[in-house]
Amino acid sequence: QVQLVESGGGLVQAGGSLRLSCAASRSIVDINAMGWYRQAPGKQRELVASITSAYSTNYADSVKGRFTISTDNDKNMVYLQMSSLKPEDTAVYYCNAQITITRAFGSRDYWGQGTQVTVSS
Image (cartoon, rainbow, N blue to C red; front, side, top):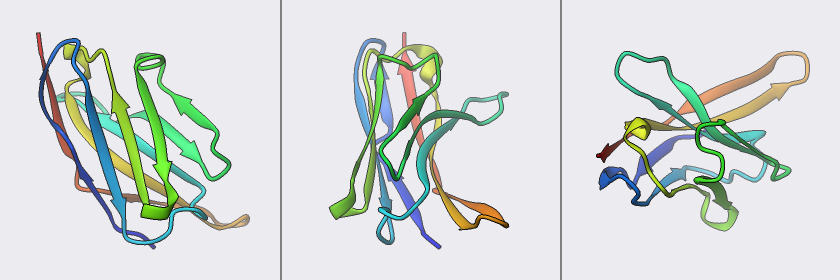
């Protein structure tokens, strides 16, 4: 189990940058995958970026080259560095942890409370 708390959201002009932080309540080194999701008004929650315990990363096509996910395992932190922000990036951003139970039973997802990112044109 793990508790997640996001921070770093805010209002920024198009072309600007923000760094989101996710603080985990325990070590994340053995968590199968950490990720950032976002949900805009009227839309479903979507994966933005993820990173596995083996440090492989995955990004949504819409953010490739602009966003970078990283971890600081000593601090139990996950970050999302966002650059060249666009108005369409406006959403509530959620931190996610996917913890494997067993090979037979799969995994369980844990979520933070979300942080608002608003990009003005």
